[in-house]
Length: 64
Image (cartoon, rainbow, N blue to C red):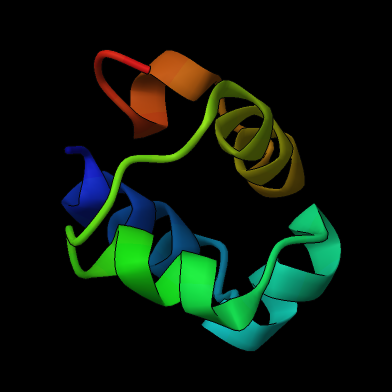
């Protein structure tokens, strides 16, 4: 689901889950589920996360 890429980009940018929640305006539970591969993001959430990390959506998530 692309979760490992999410973790990689977060690590590269030195951004913790709590910070990403604030930056992308999504819940901490949502970030946790995405990081652990328990769910796929909606298009809106995928866009907000990619924008917060400064990465294209398709680099973070496949098939969104």
